[in-house]
Image 1 (cartoon, rainbow, N blue to C red):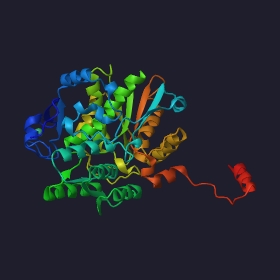
Image 2: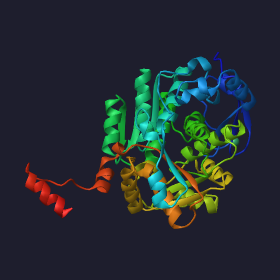
Image 3: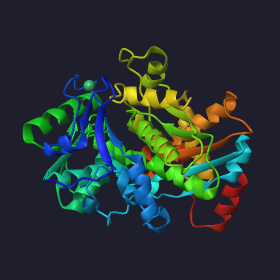
Image 4: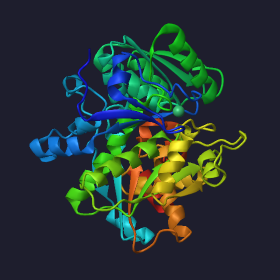
Length: 422
Ligand SMILES: [Zn+2]
């Protein structure tokens, strides 16, 4: 019998609203998945906590006395207290104040939370570390996921840390650096000749057949709790800096990240860490923008044939669209769409201010630039951009944005000539 976090109360279906006591869900000893009363694609569960109990625990042991990683919020994670892998250094990524860039764009302030500095280089380490800890807690030996790349590399990283096997399904178009990372971490990688959706379906079926722990964020409610820690940190770090943002910009693919960040912000607001809530600026690629569509239609569009260089948000069928739309609406948020050209511009712009972002991460910045151009954002606004992954993840796009070096012979004259041509 597992001893659960005493702050955990129940699991609620976001579709039909029915609840299961956490103690019942745990006693089953299984991986928690979707609502038994709904279809697996609709009945996504949400984990709820007794926030008064969290507050009491934080009074006893204040956040200021805790290690600088995301395990500092363990009362808000669905893990047994003695199962927290404290040696895995995830989260508490820096928030960089880009004052020059704010000035350039005409914003009151612009800060960037750089989640590229997580162990495998992306925000997904937050979800994978919590998922891996949960897999260990329920005694799973093998973990699996389907991913456009970063979720998989982060899972492979944490499976390696835990000494467990990882099985990964990626579309065969996944960028090479991400594949290299997976293989170096020792994962078994299936490069599926098909779309992300086909890789996803295949992974789910394989988990059923072979009994693997399923790290698919969309249906495994534990994962979003890990992503939530980005929102918890934005709140706590903003409170410490004395500046709660008016807007938090984040790229949107599957919908799970923006929903998780919002959940974290709301919990910190309820707990009194921040005194007001930011609005969400969701950014989608213009070529693949189903959540933008769902905001006005309350349903997903017929699948189109668009594409984007931002592979991490190239998700035509987002499983978590309901959670994402709900978070955006609750925050009085807005979705903006950006083209690949705008993404490449944003990569260059970020680089000039010391931030090296992959296309999906630069999307947050591209969305802010678009928001300034459309006068959604202006001189009164304090904006925070979530940078979700390092530019080393997709060297092809980085190279496209950065251009080529100036090739010369080892001669000072050639340096002088090249400088004149510049
Ligand atoms: Zn349900």
